[in-house]
Length: 305
Image (cartoon, rainbow, N blue to C red; front, top):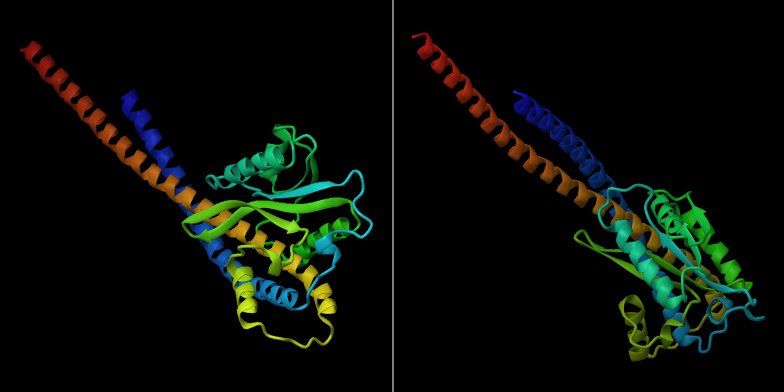
């Protein structure tokens, strides 16, 4: 009796867990659909802006801008490269955080010459807890973004990085985050944000930059600029940095939701299998208990004769 009662309690507990994970899966699916729509909507603007900057850079000749060549007075002696890592505030999202943080640690050890002297900014509670546990100093912990980052907040962060870069306080900015490729594939990446490289001079460029550069080299069109190309680039380069960082945030949010959706679906399927196995064990235990009771009754009746 005690065994069947224990199995029955476990069946009830597994059923409750399955209902919770199913609900979380449905919530994550809804959030994923909204985040994917937002990320898809911003991507054409980001790619179009980058393509425009590429085209202007190819026709304007040599470019001299602080966001590309660095501050005119040089960097300060204490200037270091800054790394921004984007993680989630909540867990239960599979390998999303672990993959991103593993890439961060590898980047700091191989590219920044160790974790002690690194300058790291972090988004998300999971990343902050991980870095605190591994004794990695955190310069800033941003909590204002959540799972719905607004362009205004991301633009303010990008503007702060550009001001610090132009003043020579930091030598560059790289972003470690999860890039959304499809619903079944997300990949952690290190994206250089500052300094901006002249897109037309990047060898073997791919994507929008490569396509724009190829079109520029093949067509060899001549443009007349009003205002001058240098003035246009002075306005477009900061907007490119802001749009790029906003797209990185959107990709990270989409990747978090799809990872949580997949993780909760796996948990729900596992709870169904566990419930099925426990039900089979309960039936067997109950059958054995009934057989034992019948045997005792028959034995008692035979003894009474």
